[in-house]
Image (cartoon, rainbow, N blue to C red; front, top):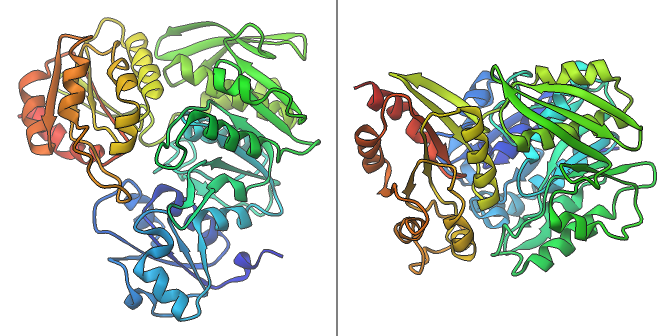
Length: 474
């Protein structure tokens, strides 16, 4: 029996993180009282927490543990297991679990569908949840995003369904205290890997160590399960060799078991076809309501998962079209005085490249203005050269200051001004805009009617949006 489901009151330390909020919603669905604490900064989950009447307190400490909860769940952020509130709970004899440990426990008893990789986890997971929901399979899901627009929530626990969909993160359970990968607590029946890249140099010094960690996770797939692997990514194709678990591959690669063909964009839809070699069948003219060749890859992974679970072609087709995107994933923020504003969480060079290529295709001849806030000094420093070559499909590029992680110290060897100077070697219109106030002034000067402005990054760049709409209208 999973003891979490039998508890009456659970407190979340760092509840506003997208993964934490999603897990809290699942536990609330089980009838458990939820409380929480976090920093006062506005975050993308504020809206859903308020809607679900989940109260949280600003700051961390023993004072937040009244009334006494049955369990503390803590995030890897805000000190993780070293957070003062967590330490106080342990002294009081209150059990503590990390988010990864709690997610692993709540998925027990259901068939876990997990999505791992540097990019595409959220979108692919959200697509699968939408497909299974449309197909009447009553899925449970906990996806690290502010909202999934066709479903209205980023998470749900459904006692009726057999499947639980979640993202599988390779980062540390609690950095510096317990560096085991978060996904090691999951036992997936269906596992999707979208790509493998060197994304966390503070934890994995080399790409080879990253690949080794993923391979160990892949080996958890059972004989009655399936590993769905994107063959377009060289690191994935190398890592899955000789695994000895059931594997099917997908992608544009002509060797893929499920090959993507004939992508085109028409009337605000992305169209593509699939050659399913294992079925000896071709699925013609599938359609998505979101842009990007990379999203045909995500949709293909979702399609394969749905087929494995027995959904029929018509259900899968209609389910894909039902998906309308999610928060901070090519999300349209607004249209003001002839300028279209979009936002995306992209923070790795390959994600940025794919996203901007999609924007160029989707918006035709319109000028694309990319505003990027790099996330963490360690990632920016290690991938500096890759970042400098990631903005080729943007007509104008601007860089805000690096959003630092709480777990690192500012590294004076790298900054956004230096990154902007490096990008100028490859592009003409490149700017350094520093903080939010200076960035808003730059936008007012430089952005013009007809532009598509895309804010990019995993930090707090989305805080710009409210003032941004006002600035452009002035």
